[in-house]
Image (cartoon, rainbow, N blue to C red; front, side, top):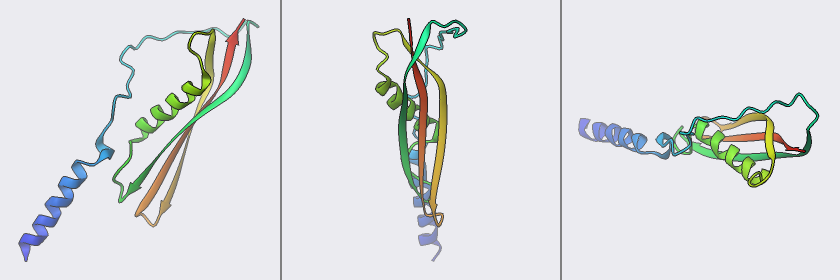
Length: 122
């Protein structure tokens, strides 16, 4: 009677250790170089508001990305829609919003929205 219980506990432990929720992915900036822009002069105009979203489903708290991974995915979606490459544009006032939907502790859905304003320098 003890062997099936021990086997079940070990199986659940192994399954939990190999789930996708433990994967952090390549979401870190390894360059660590930043650019500072001074917006005190009237040399720019606000072009548009952009946003990106990412979400993950969890069953019994297993599955999906961690919160940091969701933020990075949403930020990447936002920057893709901003179309910054090859222009004198930048994203300012970045905001991160997180919403959580839970159904009886069994199922959870986490949605992250990153938004900001695109400015263009003149």
